Length: 470
Image 1 (spheres, helix red, strand yellow):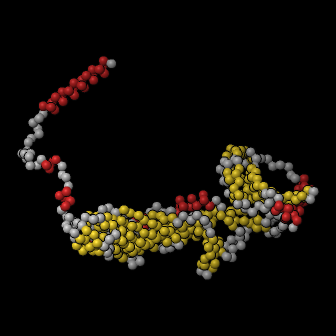
Image 2 (image 1 turned 90 degrees about the vertical axis):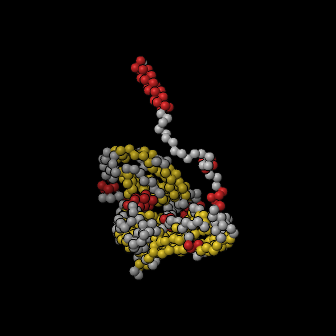
């Protein structure tokens, strides 16, 4: 307890030490993170180095007592092995150590020819092994590979969809409650970028759920408990009848081997790598039933929400009308409703706004078309005669039409012909009564054209003469 008290009281120092400038092709290179007078709880974001491969981490600890003063340090060592000879650059990098950001300056690393083996340790020659290994548990520790109970799974919400109908896709790492093999994610950002290049189908519109934090969620599969870590989730909307093919993809995980005989001072686990592969998956895409608008209608499950600025308006006054489509589907692909043209109204092009929600594995939202309407004839009008929207309902598997249920009462005098009378048609129409409508030939005035041709020929001749003289 006295020793622990001294460790806590001391100031914590964090250092990052890089390996040598030159090594042989058969030698390892290391980055060592050391915490003095404190506990090394975690060290994350060991950098990737071009020309090297990570081979895993090891832990070291040291406690020193001098004149009753206790000092300690704990280290984590990442080992790299070169993939070939050459000079490689490690740029400056940052690591997260014990929830603190620590910066380190990079360097150049030269990898030369394989180094010659050094002379054997005299202790090895005398005793067959280093006696200090037995004392401190070094080298003599035997590590075993514990069989994992985990898998990488790609699941889809449906196995068969219509063209334009959404299919949810989730890529998860599942760990059984019975699993005893220690594992953790490794270089997930770069791996996910490579995975998505293979996974995303070219014949679909994607709505990505943009998972930022990977958190475990308890689920039950066929009566067995798992912890699900979602690493990618999206909804795809097929643009044609080609099948949606998701190939098998691999995710590399850090998997630790555990010491067969754990000791208090020695290293009790050893870092290793294992790649988990998902199963390939194909979703069948069906064509929509025959319909004159089959190639242009939206697909989903929608309802209509509408709003009229006023139920009564005089002729010539602008009236606001919102036509809002709400539901589940590819909201971005929704087109404006069909508006029948009529001499009794002026319908202006709508302003459009939309909102999309991606949660709980579903893509929902709304899209609003805001119209300005100017009535020109008095009367009672049902807006359903002018505004309608046709779509394919995935719930009923049939085409459906959403029509306005609102009505507009128009008062005042007719203004159907007022627009024509108020327009200024210009001087062309003003001269109709004063100018003769007799046809005249335009082929007679060829004198001007002849003189123009003569001038052009003279210019060309003068230019040619100057060029020859020069």
